[in-house]
Length: 378
Image (tube, rainbow, N blue to C red; front, side, top):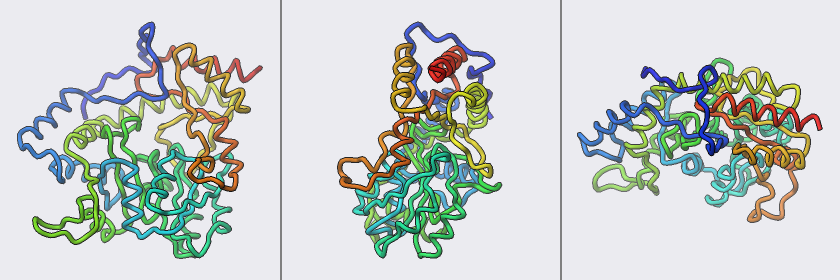
């Protein structure tokens, strides 16, 4: 593994006078290692269409994550859309209103009506006790989200899906490397998708992956992401172009080389926040059977007014937390009218993710904590 000397809590650098602290910062790996991978691309002039680096990254991710049937794709949104097509999701799918917009927009884009089920106010994940009452004769799938890397109640969801003959596609965009009961969380469901966007703890600049339960679905998806082509003169499937290219894979291989360091540094910051803030703000309740990949640190403020006060105070000092997820997806204009999902709307109005990334200066972490502690007392 490459020896990395990134700064973190134990050795913070002082930010420049006008440095802006965003909620995340794209991790850029060791440049020498990246150049070595890029040299391989130049030596073969093979830049896309399932090149050697894509094959290598696929194999290494399957080993690292402890999964089978992994397919690399262009991004996490297309990962969802391909999964719907492969698994025959049509008409309606039950999903959560508390997620990034792509979870819903990907359904609508494919002509599938999202049926929202409200969330648990502590875990922020879909409430499985409310799923069955939302099932109709048109329901073909459940699309839950492992929110901020926190596992949904996969056991209850799987039982419901089996009872009603529904497909289950998990949006695991935040769940890279998470284990559930000593098994990869990504191995649950008929499929789980990942996002490898530059904002994620593991990234390929843009990119994503689908992990299928069975190999048959994987093989069909391979055709779909390459226009349905199965040979030089043969097209046997309706498809699009959703392939990952070699430059994306090169970045992913470099990040994977350094992933242990990334996780170690994020864990320090996450724990620092937790210890300092647990008595002042509500922190997401995590499933005790689920490991933490420290991808986000969301806090729940007393109300929206207090959230906006905290955000404005931080913004004034060059710190940019994010209202994430906001808005609640049942308020999207192109879905109206829609029955209000009251818990999701409430959580979305007062949740905020704090900056967390390996190079975040300790000075700024303390400043963030101080602002939250002081304003929470007022």
